Length: 319
Image: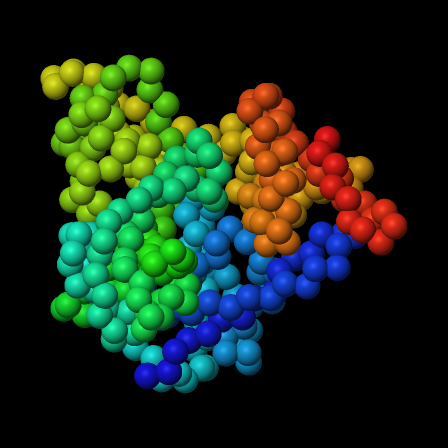
């Protein structure tokens, strides 16, 4: 079976000459009798009109999730490829246990722990649960690859690797992405009272136990479950509850989650996650640190970045 490779071209800031290209792997699923190619976007500023399969076939975007880093592409009907097509019954919804054997490209490794990362790695944002897998010299850590358990069920998707670890997004995030009515906005329940239970799940010290992800912080639960027009039974004690709507909190996020660059009438760039990721790629952590510091000092002001070419050098100014 041949490995899938997806090629990307990045959007480019004006007055910069950085030419960035990237690639990832992925796998094919059949959902509602339609084939899709699943991979990850890393919140990078990708040119969504310039994505190719194996350098030949142009791909169209089906879902680019803003609340996680999944990128789901339409798989062309006229393309024949030597790759397995997975269905939902090939997925294992319950995350594996620590020390459980898992397999990447038919090579065995094991789960070594779990972690939580905020959306887009923006401090203070709701978090995603990640499976940490041991990386050894034989490990294939190409992002987008599926990870399997000992019964050949997919347990997750590789997002990145480093420092002896492979970070895997649990497969439940793919199922939730496919089932949500709105993957562009972030929905959340803001509650000023201590929650004792959500629906039938008990909450203790802001930790809730779920079947798929086991014990997770409540912000992680609201992120994965939140959707347009959805409600939850929120208990403040074990008997009385309120039926609470999820709220669209996208507008409250000072670093928004668009996948492209946004410019105002003065041609300054809005500081969003795509811009932050771009600055990271071009090794301008100094600018990122200044942005985060400004946000800490003013939690209500949107920031913009002025990009100018001065004496053949790119200069960034936060305004």
